[in-house]
Length: 243
Length: 243
DNA sequence: ATGGTCGAATGGTATAGACCATTGCGAATA
DNA sequence: TATTCGCAATGGTCTATACCATTCGACCAT
Image 1 (cartoon, rainbow over the protein chains, first blue to last red):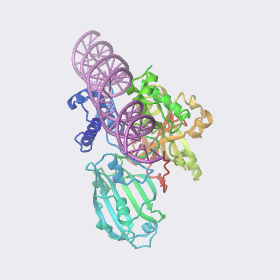
Image 2 (tube, rainbow over the protein chains, first blue to last red):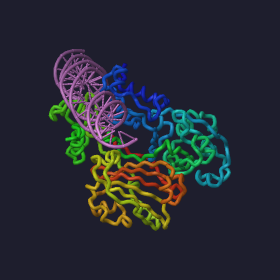
Image 3 (tube, rainbow over the protein chains, first blue to last red):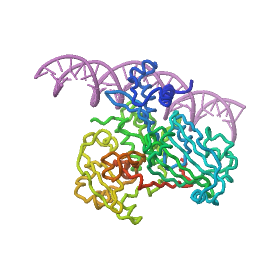
Image 4 (cartoon, helix red, strand yellow):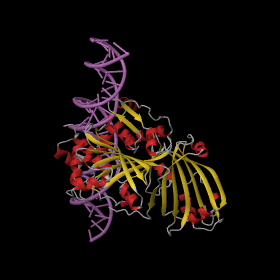
């Protein structure tokens, strides 16, 4: 078994966290207790906990105990990381459900954004995104049909759109203009995202272009305010003193 | 001597890195050697190196050695534009009103953010920002008193804090970690910002550091969701310096 | 009830020692 | 000369143990 013990323990705990078996604010057994039941030394157990702590998944309080942190999913604002990849890399289980997938005729504002003629056919796609089976983001994006013919042939519940664009159409998203603003959830959005109407949401509007600066996608993503935080990160977010 | 040994070692090494005494690509003595000369155990020395490694300052290669990493990538400069300048440049009339300006003792979370001792005195400042006489942003920021003695002597209703820091204290904000999230307005915030309680706001949390990576400011800005939009343009390529 | 004290439990730090896989390089070999 | 092999050094992991400061609740005195 080449995998270090502390990594195995960390992954095991991570699994229990993302599946909800270990709920936020729940208290873990003490280090001495856990290391005993797992038959490892306390230092090894601490190495495992450090992995999770560095991911921001734990709250540790000397004299008190170790608790599962309230999840705050972080997303780097400055990069074009596709949703699924960025989240999977952080160890979250992701999923998607298609709400709408149809062809429409571009209205004037969309036509402008995508640099096409008014009423030219576009794909209009709405997906609800999940993390650990919890709906956290409502995504809407619009692409010209002539750039992505038969887009509905691909499984957009399992695959990232950017990945499909690159693999199946040879189109790489290269540049994007994004904006972020805070909005209130409408009733429709609230129901899908399982929040109360009026709850704060983060609206990300995006216009993405290919390597030749031709616009290929216009999208709007609605993130639950209580689950997402956008970071513009320079250095690693390590804490020097507390951990 | 409350400061842990490994923190002291890490800070000592960090000092040598930022001053250039330890140059990029330079090889450090081996862990066993360094721990011997410093008269600490190897595990303690490794704890110190882990701190620096987490900051991305080290390259560690089993079987080979530990090296100083190449310096970081240059970041988009426009991010650190002070509020007043950014707005004034766009032609808006700006103003500020001090809500709170007092000395407090740092609580644990603030102390961690600012890398100071708990209960060390800090300035706690709240300002309400106006654009065209309309309140649009509620700003809170906290700085250590020892870095900005007599900060209350300056007119923070007319001057930007960053400008005061540079002009009066010779401290230049050089780097920052920011995060954005959507929140609901409390009653207090709603009254000041002249929105209804529960209205969507954008919360920007910021930790700013000087040129030597020492944290100097922790701040939280609350923007009205109906008045602000954050724009992030994503450059085609991110240059990575290959080591 | 109220307030204070004490102690057990907790996470944080530190030590000394051990074994492992990988690396780099010199020595042995073809 | 070119290639391979062996080995010492390196960082990575793991153990067992010890002491510290902080926390929190039980107990006690008021």
